[in-house]
Length: 65
Image 1 (cartoon, rainbow, N blue to C red):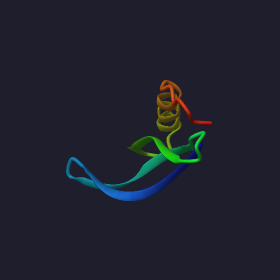
Image 2: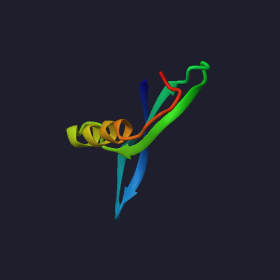
Image 3: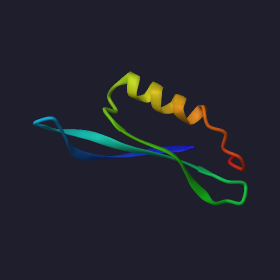
Image 4: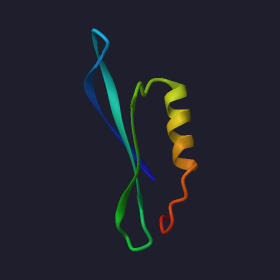
């Protein structure tokens, strides 16, 4: 599994803040890269990463190694 992020400006109420769009990818048995999950949030937050990784763990990915 590989996680990567790009930062975007988002509007939260009247404020513009920088948040990360995180994408997790994996490789199937056939060698095809597949998106396992995405999230937008504050990547400096422990809670963000805990919830994101828990959401990936909760899903069964047949054929991914």
